[in-house]
Image 1: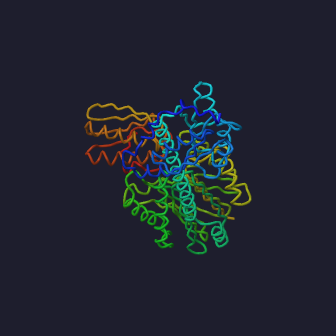
Image 2: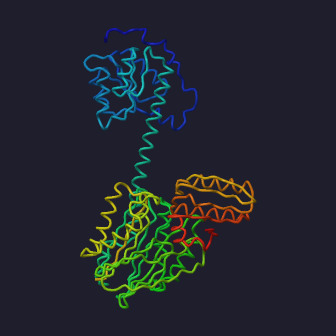
Image 3: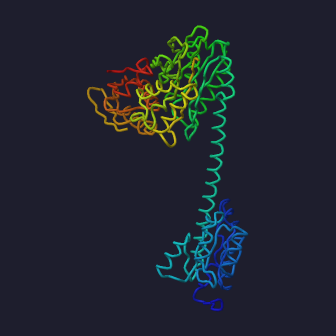
Amino acid sequence: MTASLRAENVSASPALEVEATHEATVSEQHNLDASILVVDDRKLQRTLISAYLRKAGYTCVEEAADGNEALEKTRQIKPDLILLDIVMPDMDGYEVCRKIRSDPFLRDTPVLFQSGINSEEERSKAFDVGATDLVTKPIYAPELIARVKIHLENRFLIRELSIYQERLRYELDMAHGMQRALMPSQDVIDKLSARHNLGIAAHYEACQELGGDFWGLRSITENRLGFVSADFSGHGVTAALNTFRLHTLLDWMASESIVDAGNYLGMVNTFFTRVLPTGQFATMIIGVLDLENDRLTYSSAAHPPPILANDRSGDVRYLESAGLPVGFRKENEYTVHSTPFGEGDVLFFYSDALVETPTPADPVFTQDDLLRLAGESVGHANVKDMMESLLNRFFVRAPGPLPDDLSVLCFHRY
Amino acid sequence: MKHEVNVADNEVVVRLSEALTFSDHGEFRDVLKNVISNGGKKCVFELSQLASVDSAGLGMFMIANEELQKNSWDFALRSPRGQVKQLLDLAKIGDVVVVEM
């Protein structure tokens, strides 16, 4: 085979006339720097194909004379494209291609088979073992160059896309971490729990994208603890950026002003009505647990209704939470609600994902389910177990990724 | 979301059905644009067949309210039921938009 240099397999060198007829663009120049491995057991064929490629402007052209050398050079130089002969002694092109496709570091390399075999069976075998494309002999240079060019373009496009996706995934992970850091850590929760002699548990789970949930705590005095729970409409970067805005705004507002929950929520609303475009808004609940006078005081802007249960009497009920969402109308006045919050009381705040997963029309937890299960959960010894028992039952019914952020905040008077 | 538009006595009635969610944003905007470009005095979103709405859908009602008011239209939401009514009540939407029961 090596000695039979069949002239009919080589066209009358039109490709040697292939000239760079136009100025190479930046991306074309990038492609011309690509490394190409030409594999053929016949020297004349290798030399000719390499000459075609060099004439077309490709400068990094390597050659291999058999299957073993092809694999060795592929592993060594990691070419951007391989032109592979099928019929070779020892190891044929099919086997070389199979080995390349089974190597995780090389499997994406475009492999163009070049062969004089024209039977349909052989052609389909080439694709079965993983050929990217076929160039039939006799090699027609303009066709060869056109195919090489398009497969290199695809190769670089896919590589750029992969790099972009990788970067996006990294940035999204970073953003998730930054968003989680806006909310109190377990260490802070434990300290506040000890300071106020109050069981506190929280769960925050971002959806795959970034989300718009936020919650926070403000220790005003030993006997008064402020809280905020919010959910910005939609999800993604916009909703997430709004949680950063809220965090900054709350940091800037005096902690003790939360005692006047209606006015505090009104100020937050005024700010967001100014900065949010129509259609964007937040549901929010802001309030204070007064542990000296055993009272909960709060104002709500359309946040899902909180649940108040008692671990001794077994009573469980929803609290009123209707109110214009934050961002709908400036200078809105919010109603202040006040209710007893004494020994054995357990309070649940949550975002709408708990009652709108997978869809608002057909949720796994209806409001009735939620009330019943919250009532059952308060039989557990501590607040963490109460919240976990509720969430476990939710996740059993709603496995898989969440469509929206889920946050739950739970307080328990011992 | 599915929709059907009927015009009678200068009132354009957009009957929404199924669910109004984030993914309907583009179609909702197109419906709104068509309503405004065809002219009239009052636009009603009829919701009796709308099974559910999410927070993005609520935002779309606010966009419709603003766009129609800007073009000197009257705007109303009519006959919300079930989850849609619950959400509109929770958001006290009646404080900023006319809701006809």
